[in-house]
Image 1 (cartoon, helix red, strand yellow):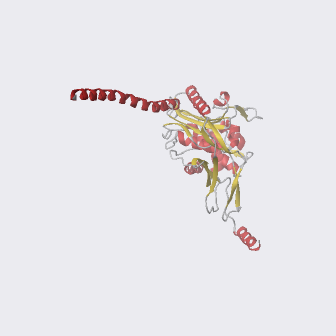
Image 2 (tube, helix red, strand yellow; image 1 turned 30 degrees about the horizontal axis):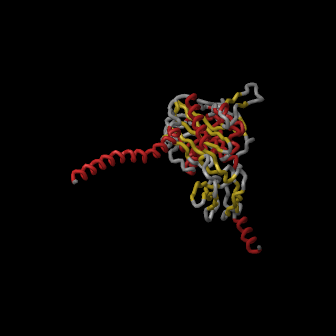
Image 3 (tube, one colour; image 1 turned 135 degrees about the vertical axis):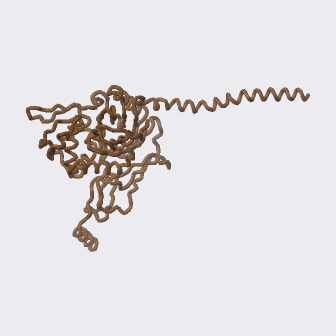
Length: 398
């Protein structure tokens, strides 16, 4: 009897030993399937030293590969240069028709250039074309001197803007990306400043051009051909900036828009232009196949108003200067999505264009989906004593 019971217990133990591993394997299967579903994401940009794929509206990172590595950015540097130019235009410090004179220093730049002669004048509009299409190092320095007074002062402005945007992996030493010590950035930071530049929606008028001419009415017109060939063959591509030096290899910050979804793909350290363009195209393909967005504000939509203490203007009307949307997987539920505008308390002048003044928080039910920083659309100077006196008197008699 005892022998029979022992035999049964032994058989049960052996059976259990066989079942448990099978059960463990079955339990592990869903996790393995989940990892496999994400495999295409991991296969993106295999030849790049560093890469990132980002939704332009929300800043959501879709794909990341060593994106915080500090690397030489080459001419992608000019994204920050163009950003400061666009801010100066928005703020009224520059006009597209303003003339810019090339200094002897600006004319001496090597590498990619539009061959500015010392003392030669071009409009801001023409200079932007020279930077965006031909990656003109000379045009970049000429614009830096126009805005900052000198390239050194302009570079200080670049680094201040990088700090303001939270670019922790970046330090600029010049405005054009020519090789120099202590000049570096990362794919993630480049995506951040690319996203900021794209908020100035008119920039793609330049970065999306196939070609154009400078000195059209002269005896020697200069043909501009966009160095970013994706704008020629990739549907929806309209920017932003290529880069190459022997140290940096082939770099690109590209953007494309389809069906209301705009994405930014950045690669650094690619071995050649063919591989660079192919891998960026694959990154863009992946994002458009897998994601869509839910619109919160369209460009020009009213967002709200904010009071400015002691400002030259007492309040600012906030309008969406660019689209605001939430990135979502295709097929995901879009029910019960709402937003709240949360402005900073006690905003006091002076305020610079681009300064954070609040945020838009997007929820689905009670779950927070995304958060957008709201920035000052223009600079607001401190009100003079006479303006403050009139306001005070007006308040007394109103």
